[in-house]
Image 1 (cartoon, rainbow, N blue to C red):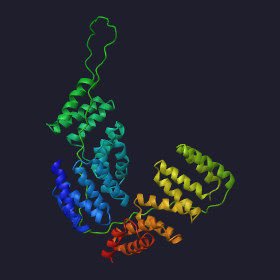
Image 2 (cartoon, one colour):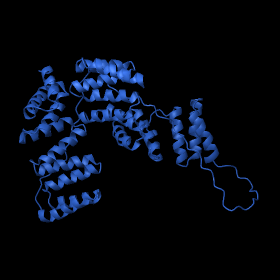
Image 3 (cartoon, one colour):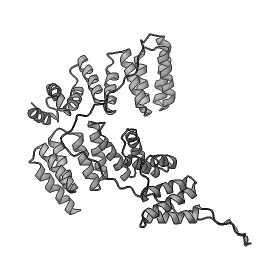
Image 4 (cartoon, helix red, strand yellow):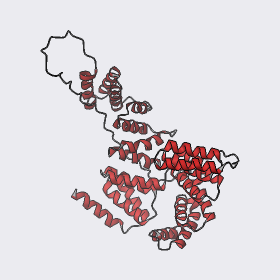
Length: 419
């Protein structure tokens, strides 16, 4: 432990005298050479002295995960996703860190989102299956493992055996475990599971019962030892900086189709709306959603009802419906600032950066003096060399609004380097 602290201290002291880009490049070099503690020191300095990027946070998280500092790794990956919600490597790594910390419930939604991609790598399905194993959701674990293209490994066959045993399919479990032992003669976990299965799960030959002396209480059957899944070894994913072959196509949001909104009975609609608020305050989301829907059906121009319905859907983890209703709220009331702002944030979180920026720009058209919106827009524009001129405009406007911002020095350094 003392050796680690000395290394980290030296790395930090050396990195202070370097530029942010040089610190990042040096960190990447140490990372490639598996010197993760020293790499982390340089990535931390790059983030402190320069404009933070999702890539740098992801590298820092990967370095911390490799050194066993899971809590710090989780925090770093979360920061990466705040800057770039579409950063799939950071999302994958965050899920891996949650699994390492025995927090499968936090890992599952991240992995499910990654698993929806058309080019989803097999490792995502393996991690998702392993997460479901940790939560004893055997059926979903099986479904995830069945999506892995190549299941002919001892590790996967062992895990499928564990799943089938818990689902009550002992004979099929035996087949999987025997396959695992054939694929890897040294796979101790599969051999141990096979022995437990044969002793406790498979039916025994029926023999004639022998007379026994009566006892005061029936004998308690021993509990079978638990079957063990193969421990998941995950290598964090990083994106080594290199010259891109082609610019990626930015994902775009397809907005909901909105017909002409005709006013209805607002007085009756408000009674449903107030009921929705009461239900939402009691965390009764289905009832709140139903009440807001009635308010909208009664008066389709009720912008606040669409807005509250969007929030209710978001609380119910239904982001797509939340986006739809934010759009309807804005259609009903184009100057509805809070609806547009929340809509932009959710678009950004879902990876629709171009659409989010369009909404931030519309907010600034109505009120140019919003520092938070200026800063967010500048940060998003700064990620793309093609839009850095717009980033400069928004950073300049932000500094005029908040000249003493804690980020002022970093922003001025960035402006100096990106004239």
